[in-house]
Length: 616
Image (cartoon, rainbow, N blue to C red; front, side, top):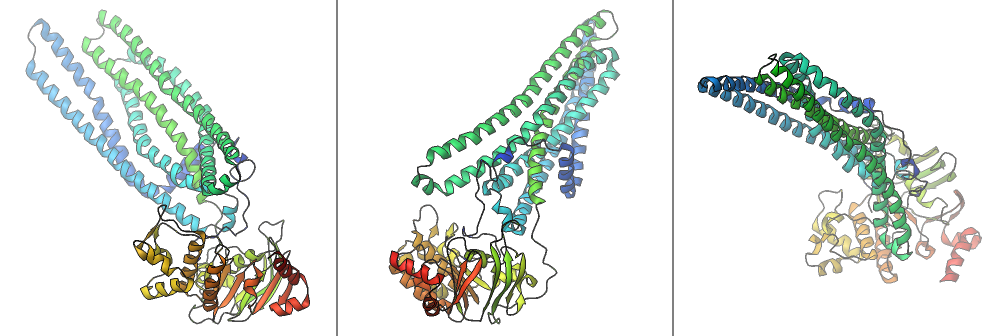
């Protein structure tokens, strides 16, 4: 698989095991501290500053629309009084009609403003969601590979999908709802005072209890919303791992253990989601009860005042509407705050990812090697490296490879073979020493420039959903049909492709069945099309049969001509014709030489080779 200007790499990279019992994505999801609500929302507002202007317009529309709607009960009060007075004499239908038309016009204007607010916020939130996803993807390309050694892929996907959707949904629905209902609440309170202060005190007194209960519920439910988002990321990570390794799970009869693990995580998600939903769900019924209690109290007091002649019947009608407008927003405000808590939990996860330590900025680097003109000399000079600071894998590696040489890197598992090519490609940064290409340290070049110099084939194939031609031309432009066919013929896959219904335009998806060997042949053909001056083959023929291996080996010999090549192989019989064999043992060079020299020397390499020959 070619690795060029992208972050995907094969599984040969030494990665910390991803588990859900103690590793990344495991116990860290339990007992998380509640999020800093104010700080997180501050970050979200700062991040959304380019959308402040349309958001303010939307808020103004919501406020004005709500204020206009609050004028309706006053007109209704006048209509009621006119009708009441007319019962004794004659109903003034002309005045009532005019007031009715005014009320309809006001409500129509209010509706237009409310619609405008919803339209603007929907547009803003979709743009914000798009920007968040874009920034997360760009962030992924700037993160070092070490980040993904300790982070579940499923958890990263959850931040891109679930968390961003939660943020967008809240901003779209809750912000407008919160502004409208706060305006409605305060406006209703003001209009009630204007209408009758005695009835206002009755309504407010019953609402104080509602505010107290709402605040208490919010305090208790916040931590559960935090855990809910964390557990959601954990379960996504687990599902992604199990389904990507479904065949292995089946082969080892691990269905029950994986099911138990899923149920454990799912149980934690259920518990946190239930507690969050239960506590937040109690807010609306409680506020509805408080609202109805205030409604009854106002009816009784209003009736007494009307009987005593202190207020007219129209005032009671208007006040009854205001009480409903006053109490209804409380439950809506509670719901909006509940959604904002979910957003705080989701936002912190997103911003946590966006604030992760990135690879060093390389925009200042001007030195560049041209793939078309470089010789291909490579030197490792006293290289030291460890995936963690407390465990050094490459201890003191030095080697000089002349241009055009075919270098085989051999050694037992864990000796540092794949680590060397990861360092050569700058997937990881070395702890000490230098790696040079044409006497230029690669840390003086940009990573993109280093990747331009290499074509790479890994043991684990990677093909995306697209046509065969698109997979072969991946990340390379202006590739001719002849070049594609020539490469596929060289690796022995051309005949198979022609047997497919659409040939090279066949879409590789779940309906197209390819063997592991055929997938490997395609990735090798992709590397041949890349035609870079340096070549890395990491167990490139491990997935093919003996006959296909001979075909590919011949193609590899053709591919390595004139190129500096690094070949990692466990099957030592395939690298006997290498110009140089580097034997690694425990992160150090055990011996260097040709196959004949190393066999004659009779050291560690000879033991490895003879043991394989005996096994064969």
